[in-house]
Image (cartoon, rainbow, N blue to C red):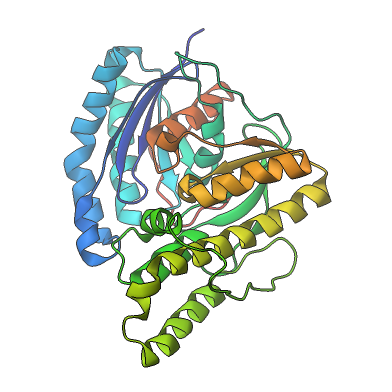
Length: 339
């Protein structure tokens, strides 16, 4: 029996809808919210208002591009959390109305779980290699940095996570201090390619077990710039590329050090990368180098599915649909939602 899932993603500032059939992507539409760049970060109230404006046309476009009708949709999957409560509420409310009108089941999806299962999306035009269970996933985004042990499509366990700031936050906040535009991560990545990663040395945190910490690096970076600017007011402009390269190299080393430790402890060499920061070229290159050095089988997501998107919500909904994990009309979004 064929399974067609409509996915809805509205956890932060991107409104997205996707349609998949038997795990194959038919459409994936994303409406971005450029207005947040003016404020140097996402403004929750503006985000939720934009979701309200975008969700109907985005869903309509996704269904049209998929070449199906509403009556062919078997279930609607939506992001329940984690994320901005107002934004999540828009997606959840739409899913309730759509499911009620079409008399189809609803499937709640953990946004983080969706990032991991993006590796199981199928493309009708090409074959994609998928991780074998069990595998480790380094999940890195603006708000999360964690190592997840994935035993099956729906059985996952976090074995290491940040105790404060995430890697994405370190990129964005350090970029802001340097006067770079928001979001800072992609800009740092671009400038890092032009700089010397060994020009500046930043202390790496010492955190127990497999957990991460990036708040100390962020603070150290701030104080370093403050001290240098006292003697040279043009220090940032003169050294911007090298600063970005050194910062990126440090963050990547912190991420990979714990991932290597996790792989050694578990004996697992199936390693996946996911989340918004998985688009970072320095991190992707380091993963490829590690695969050759440690004999890992590494899985990198396509760039189109690194940021928040509804295709990852739909594929998670696909597996939950098979498992008959449905929710009722009394479901509410959750701002905090762990794996």
